[in-house]
Length: 335
Image 1: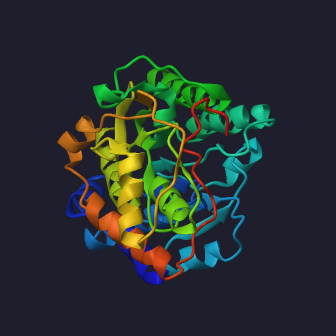
Image 2: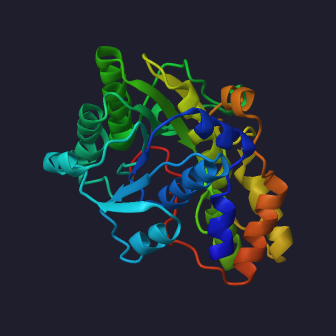
Image 3: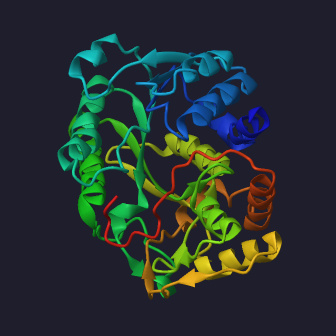
C-alpha cells in the first residue's frame, strides 16, 4: 500500500513548475475521499521539490480514523470539519490555493436533498470563505449525459444534459462556482473528471473483478474513459494555472474511448478465464473528449497496457480494494 500511495502521489515536473509559480498555502477540501489523500500529498511533494515552503491542509470529516495520522506523516496538516456546517468555515485556515473535492454521489437515491446540499449549497459556503483564492473545483463528466460513441466524447463547450439528481446537482455545483467567479472575480478552474482509476477502485477494477470472479460483465454502458489517478491529480493541479473569471473548464479523462467488451476480453486472456457478458452495447455512452487536457498537460504518462497489467497482477495477488464499485454501467443516472 505504501508503494502504491507513493506512486499515486508522485508529481510530474510540470506540476512542480506550476506550484513553484503559484504562491501561498493550499487547502484540499474533501481530502478524506478516495483521491484526496494522494492529491494532497502530491501538492506537498511538488512544493518541496520546487523549494517552496508552504502549508498544505487536508480538510475532511475523516470517516477513516487512521487517515489524519497518515496525512501528518506526509507533511499535511489534517483539519476535521463538516463542510456543510456554515460555522465550520470561521475555523478554517486562509489559503491562496483551494482544491475542492467534496461531493456526494453514491446513495443519492432517496437522499436527494442531502445530495443537493452537498453538491450545490456547500460550494456556496466555500466560495464565500475563499472568494479571493485560486480554486480548482472537481466536477464530473456526468453533467454532459450520454453522447454518441462515434463522436468520441463530449467537449467542454457542449450543452449540458444531466440525467438524474446526482448529475443535476453537479451542474448546480458548477453554476455556483461560476456565479461567484463572475460576481466576486474568484479565479476558478472546473475539472470534469471521467473516470479516475488505480489498483483498488475504478471502472477497470470493476471489470477485472467481474472477470476474475466469473461474474457476467454488463454491456449496457459499452464504452468508457479511464485515466490513472496519478495522472488525473497532476492534471488537476496544473489546471490551477488556468483558473480564471469566468471559470476555465477542462475534461480530465483518458484520451481513448475504451470498449467494455474488449477490456473484459483482455482481462479474460490474462486471468485465463472465459468471459461472460450480459446485455449488449448501446450506441451512446458517458464519454468525455480529453483533447483540451492533452493539449495543455500532455497525454497521461501511464498507458492502458501497463494499467491493465498492473490491475491483473494486483487482483491475482489478492490485493485489497476499496469495495466501492463505480456503477459506471448506470445509464439513468440513479446512484
